[in-house]
Amino acid sequence: MIRKNDAILSTLSVYVIELALKLSPLPVSVQRKALADAEAVYQQVRKCLERGQPHLLELSCEKVEDKKVTVLVSEIVAVQLYEKTAATGGSKRPGFSFET
Image (cartoon, rainbow, N blue to C red):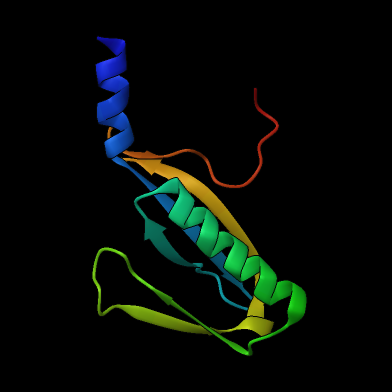
């Protein structure tokens, strides 16, 4: 029974890639259904930050195909990846915590 519940929970998970921008109190985020896809976007953003190229980075929404956002790479301060589950009604706490 536990394995079946785990399978159900994994289908309700979504992965959030969140960008913190300079002088902006709100982050920009995109979501992916698969962890591998989320990791690919995360790595793409990291490579852009390391190289400073391209100057503009366009990200699209997986849920709404025509929804896109373009950000200036030089304005990105941080990028993080975390899992958001519908079953718990929230998300795993993004960032880092000293709680165990």
